[in-house]
Length: 178
Image (cartoon, rainbow, N blue to C red; front, side):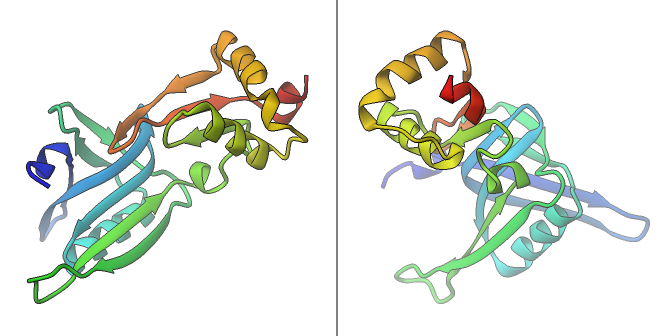
């Protein structure tokens, strides 16, 4: 894949204490967030960098995120964020690339607070997610009519993303049943 680096964001973490200073920069392949609240952050790098970022996520630290278009924003995953680590083995590399997926509490409990976050918005997928997350008794044939009402009430909002086009749907189970 040529020029894949042009589709990646850049995450920077700076911590300065009395005796030391730390500056870590990692590439971001997926991000979802609104304003300063990050919901999903997918980065890759080496073991020590990912360990420092994991600790910073659990300390509720703020990161500087640069989008592929050059826009910069300070973001944080907030309280009770979860981190998941993995490794990607690449041909020709002696050591695997480490991967970190950090998820906010709101995304982890997606749909339970009347807010559902989706990676993208094809109507079929959005309807299936709403039915599942909100526990709606529903038929696939209802999707167009009900989502048209949700769109008309402006309850679907695009949020910031890297590597995806995320949306936030603000609707409770009671509202959807009406």
